[in-house]
Image (cartoon, rainbow, N blue to C red; front, side, top):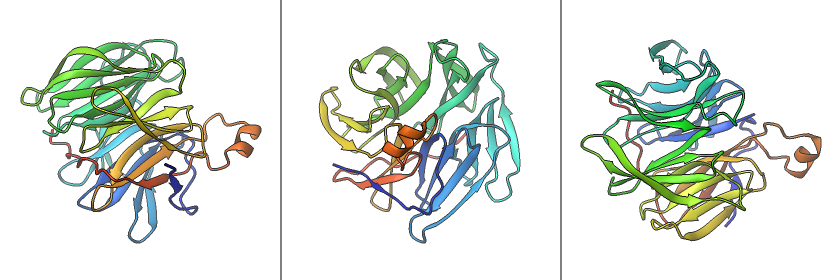
Length: 290
């Protein structure tokens, strides 16, 4: 399977990340972390706009009022996309001053899970995974290099979580009522392929993980067996999310970061947004309810 360019009119992202489908507004959101923008795209009209948050955005989801809740360099913010006004909800006590938020998603009760990483030295395991709910911020995991792909199984009993540098996707037993994850074990470990980046889970429980640098999306069954691949014409594939009315359009973000002249000639579409129609639908996103 091969993904196609969504539109040449859409901007190039230096470091595209975190696609998020708004089912109510029928629009796709994604971040350009280095470009410091949160983009919004309307597939029906082909229109695009963006807002510029006050710091680097690692992820952006929507709350029940349709406002953005974003993990920025120094904390979690609520942002009004229409005028750019923002409010800092909290600033965690980082293990290192160079840490920043990178990837985040909500579970199906609207709790926000987000992870951090060292922005300047990826060899340092100073990152952590947090959960934000009505009771505050809770630390779930520590000693993380690059906190990345999150997702939940269709029955909400499994949570997936990725550390890109350690080349592993973990799975946890998940208690949806309590919002807790425990009994971490390896789901897939990548040795000879690209590093796992962002991920999403489809209605059959398959895990789709972006490969950096891996020129595509790898698909795994719920028991961790390979179940297909989506090829892209660019190496730095960063994340994916289902969208569209039937949740069968897989949107894929990529990056043009650190692509030298030779690399750009080899992969001139780096940093663009891609999509592919899938036979299996995705799962709807739950808005943040904190």
